[in-house]
Length: 297
Image (cartoon, rainbow, N blue to C red):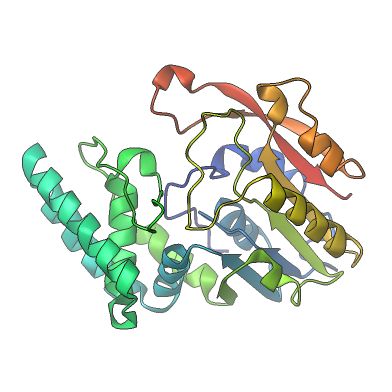
């Protein structure tokens, strides 16, 4: 079977936790469970692992980030054109000195924001190319927008960033051919989900400290109110007989008395697994933490 990995670096990406998440795949997956859904697909680390391992009849992925979903669509439908553009960006960027790279990066960021705000569908290939370029060259691969919806991450410091990973992009494209893509609220996935569906839910994480700031992946916020609403959604699909796994941060990393998720998901199985905090402007603040894997089986 075709194997692939995430084509972007993504805050909260699950590559480092795949071994733990794999242990949560239902034993019926690929057999009696032949449908898969990710309402918050993000970088797709779990998606591509599942698609590489199992033959499934129907797969639905969704994300509220329009630029991310557009990039999935362009990889699915126009991968050769996208690769050609990315190869040009990569060769141009690699040949530049630091000052030239800065000018190039910020010009591309400005162009991306212009297309993002003006919404010209004719520029979808260009927007996807810019999305991958900025992801591969910005600080820590972070996608963050301000209150106006403008991407505002500064340039990172990489000698030869891999902007065009042709082999993986072609593998991703092949795996996406039978995948349905949606852009919207996670609740829009409800009509797809039934008792033959495995659902993996990886929402924006609840900040583990009051100073955590890397949460704005889209213009909409995802605070405690939204976490509680997501808990109600999980209850709803649980009653359908769906197998569901939810990831989130562990509040007890910072406050042993914070039982927010222990209370919200008290009727489910809650496991704490070791992870590393990968995105932090202070390198000394990156270290081992625990994250939650919540399941209904």
